[in-house]
Length: 341
Image (cartoon, helix red, strand yellow):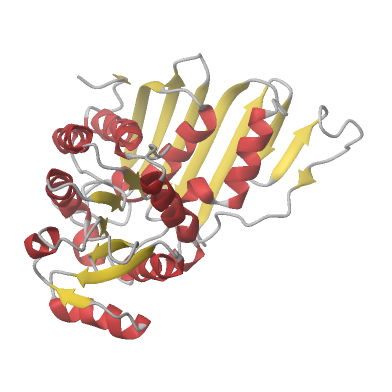
């Protein structure tokens, strides 16, 4: 700590890093001490545009050796997250890591185990857990406003192409790996967050209609939950439409469709959907995401010595489901049981 403040090193200077940096600046308990990237000029550009008073670096090992750094913010391409996360844990740094945190089950296990061994605090950037609509839905579910859930569906439809700032690495199998890991993991994590129970079996199919990606750009999966509920998720990178994050939750006493509620328990006189006026997860723009809450949450977990509800140990399960879906696609839709061996 420096003058009672936690030192933050941002490593990876893509578009999302700008949003992260803006949120770190607002927290009174931290100070950004460095911004790093594969190209030092990219890091310096972020520093200059946001007016930060810190160093630019292209040497991650040097960042980890800096005693001023208490937290590393990992926001580079998918394939560097796990090795960078493990290296940070091994030297005792707390971690905020972008999704996906890994691109294989071997990496998933290795990162989970390294963080557990080190005892550092972590948050995986499933930032929609702090979206106001998610807050409302979680509150309604806790009150049993729609009874017991028996069907859960969340979809991530985000048309991506050469315009995307992550295109260079994101469309390749080696560095992007899959549609579910690159974007659909947000939907899978939302499903787990709403369900409150784990997925125990998946069956999935995919296609690559436009042929722009080195993996199936469009995926659909059927899900079975430990308590008997069923569900569905899909992720469409070929979608020719505005960004859409669909949420459908059917319960024994009502239904939630995005920000619309049908619940005779809450609204005995309703004759149509009741609409919640709130902020929706209706944009893929990083500026729209509630990173302020995510950053504040990690800082609180560190200062109060408690674990996050979306730490690496929890996110391990979300990534495991995504990889089970990918495995099912590779095997022609074969049902895959979880947990994976």
